[in-house]
Length: 425
Image (cartoon, rainbow, N blue to C red):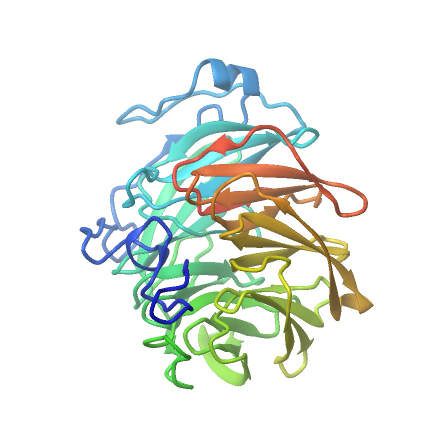
């Protein structure tokens, strides 16, 4: 959800959004919903495409942007420098100025400079992306009224294949993640306030949904009209699945039956009424996690018990911004620093992680270099931080210093309605 204070309440509700998109940062019901492949696999004729130039040199791509052609969509690429890695970019295809599918780009691991690549077409409203542990398949939500999840196979030679889509059983899915086993895809339906489970086949394709759980209690928080599941993720040890609900100010802990693909609630954590928890990030140690609460502009440090799945939230603390709508935290691989995206002030907050993850100490904030940073991601080695800036349609990059400091790296990458950035290993 993307929100701002309204004249009536001074705090946002799920229906009041300054995102630049109708609704809470999501395509409006008034806008015709883009069609998605019908349920079943394959859902539509299989697409086979070459990500021409996906790992091509920056100069070659800048001089001659790759255009996908039909029907073959085939473009050959040149060998990539060893210091080049790939980014995948989420967008809204139904939004004004939005993209046409999952964007691709490459970045220089030394300088952070980003070069645009071709687009993976045939994927509607891919506003959030998640990679299979094998690295062979990427999954995207279709954030629209008829919510769905889509699987795309990524081959080592740069080709891709859209494997089809499955309904999530809800509306407005905003987040998805792959269970560490690689056998289950978890998704969160924001608008309808539910979470879903789909089986993953050996080829990465998705089977029929095995579970759908609606957050019917507790009652919605102040200014909310119902539950709004914003995220679903698995604890670092793989023992529990946690779902963050902005509408009920609650984090639900489930146990996933890895044979049947069903969820059983084992505990829930209540946040301050009206806090609007949005996104939970675990410390690598697995016994602490950090919540970005977008409605009361706080960060919450939580203790986590891996055995029981119990999450215990602490008091909300400063984001370093007087006003704003926190989006998400990321934590470096060594667990030393955490970074928060602040929409509104358009800044990044740097925290020192202390006491084995049990405490965050605010260090400073820096400009993000774009407008409305919706999502953050770290490079695999935690040497670079990337921010997807929704309103400015850019992705910005920062080098991370030994002291956790952030230094802008390269120029912002133009990316239509950038709402997600996913660095590939």
